[in-house]
Length: 341
Image (tube, rainbow, N blue to C red):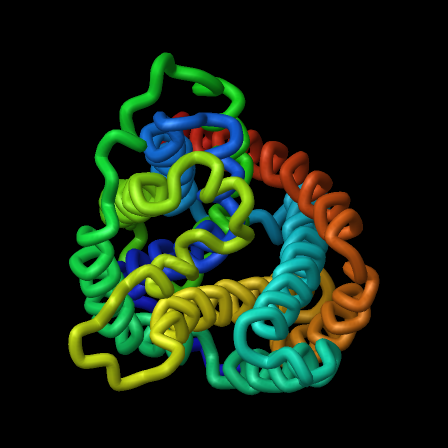
């Protein structure tokens, strides 16, 4: 595995896009169910928690965990978490693609092709993922801007006026625990040309909070509370409501699906890369690509267990608890780093 350096800017972009993709799919409808008309506010507050812990993680060095027995156990925990969340999101992505774009393609073929592409990216080193994120950022921003601009025609502001605030604590807590992959910022520092990137990651997280809150508020104003809860992918379906004056595609929703697809792809790339790297730190360094290949095979096999919506929710609930433990570990490592200073 080629060990190129990541710049602070690339880490910022990766933090933004990785978490954007996995958040766009289910979080808006879930927070609408629990938070009502205030759901966009509670979603933004929860994402700010990601920004806080991401900034803490960026101030630490996960590479130092390999220097102690307890640290190696934690590395194995993080590797297993990457493996499990990669498998779950691989199946969720393949299932969503089947519903939205590829109804006649077997899920295992979509997953297999995706795993091969992911492993190929892993062999090119972390800088390849960083450069891919930088290239994708501008199209993502332009598409999101276009969606917001064209969707304004369907906004009904009265839908955003709730009778009373509800579900604040529960909704913020759910969002805070749904930040899959925040802990990987700990290990991105091993490839960063600068030692401290906390402020940069915090700014990226604040921007992510604003974007997700704005998109959720826009969706709520278009679909309403009931419409948000009955739609599986409200953000991805926003473009279905747009009446383009000069329509040049039959399925304009593919643009929003493209934003989500590339973001989730970057997230899965992160899961596979860091899983292989973490195993290599514990067992044998220099073999990262082969551990990543083994992780890819296991990830594909585990994805076959997520055969129903109930199974997906079971695994996601387990990952929420693992996310909570990860946040506690990040806080502990940050406090330990501060005590040294």
